[in-house]
Length: 177
Picture 1 (tube, rainbow, N blue to C red):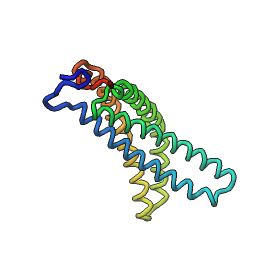
Picture 2 (picture 1 turned 90 degrees about the vertical axis):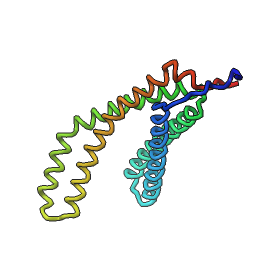
Picture 3 (picture 1 turned 120 degrees about the horizontal axis):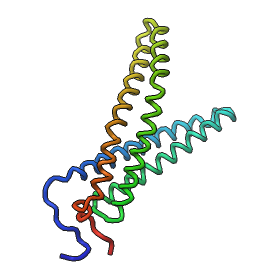
Picture 4 (picture 1 turned 60 degrees about the horizontal axis):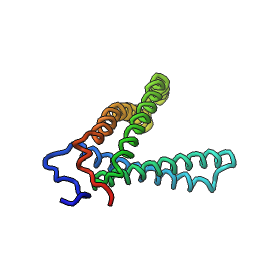
């Protein structure tokens, strides 16, 4: 067997499924950031100078998130192709994403009482306006789902970072010539 080829691996490898899932979620994120950036760019023509500065700030965040999501896509593709150069950076990216989810989830959890109170007040004021009530209830549901997804993502990302560092996974990657 040539020195640069990885040994044949038989059987199911859950870490590969996790890498595919991470790739798909990063691709979805790229699409979302591009769509949001396009909306912000279209609003720029009609914006006041103060609003324009805020729009530029949102565009900068969109570009930053897009670049990070694209980098995650590249790292995932490298791992899927079992390229050794992608394994360690993806481990670092998984750790950073887990930390980002922990911080974001903690901030959302800390703001939950304010959000719950504000949405309850909005529901009380809306009365029989079914469309607006539906929008507020949807926002509450999205908030809860986001918290749950962050809580699930943290251990999965940490597990993937750990798993990619195990000798069994490391042996499956090819070194560059």
